[in-house]
Length: 354
Image 1: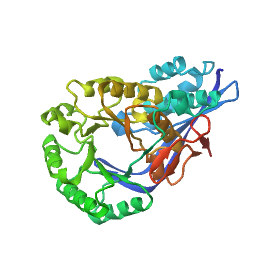
Image 2: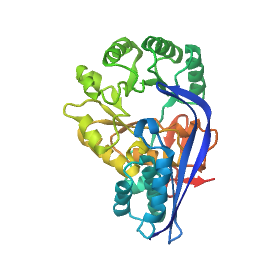
Image 3: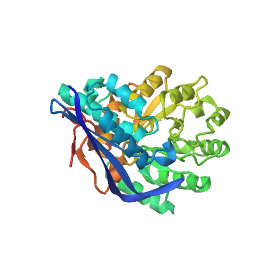
Image 4: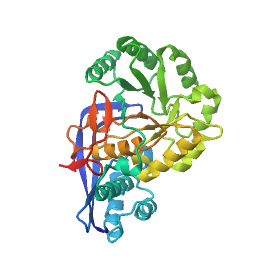
């Protein structure tokens, strides 16, 4: 089975609810939509969302890579090893474009096999809960109101964006824990907004609040500062912006281990293939895995979910990116019931372009 055509388009999408993180406010996103057509009539679907502040890739960079791919990949086999490797090496500066192509390739292979992608990869989990994200708010009352909304929708894991004022952060988390009670989990993401002294203080003062973990608290060029923390505290740190590749994973895993959790995002590393390579490092080093996302279509969220459920080291999901969209480019992809994510029984990713 060979590739006969690769199509791509860029679609702008408004967010249903703009949100603020430590270094930006986001109200709209663009997704690159890729279809890989084959001579057997199978069409693989993939999407990608660039993150210029994190990866340096822009929509223009991605469009240029996808235009090259529309020529380069025609005639190649639908093969995860050979063609997958070609995608990863040909467009080094365009990880979201690579991700869209790689996702479409995986979708096509699983569709040709007639099974969900996770079963082709080898399933390790049936379903897992995802967190849902509360952005930085002007007041604690807004944080609590959004938490009430999500709890009412069945979510039992909240991720709270922090990083502008540690005093405000501590106050709001105390109020949040008091509001939701002891059972729901709270994980936090300062988005590189803390210093190591801030982080040390945060870990001490939030100990009574049972914070699940802290995602990327320090700037991504300050990873070595984490060695000032004890081993147990470093186990509570998740690497996000510091983790783009398997080589990053090896560095972060040590010894000595700088973090206890990897946050894999397909848009940072270039798709399912490289993500699973990072997952192998996690499995070999005893590092827990979280699978995260940007603001993405159900297509790439489903791709991350299939990879996550195929990885033995997966412990956490943060795959709520499509929930932020006022409209999507596709339907299907996964089932979400009371905060639990599971794949659909259809072949491939189970997503359909609208």
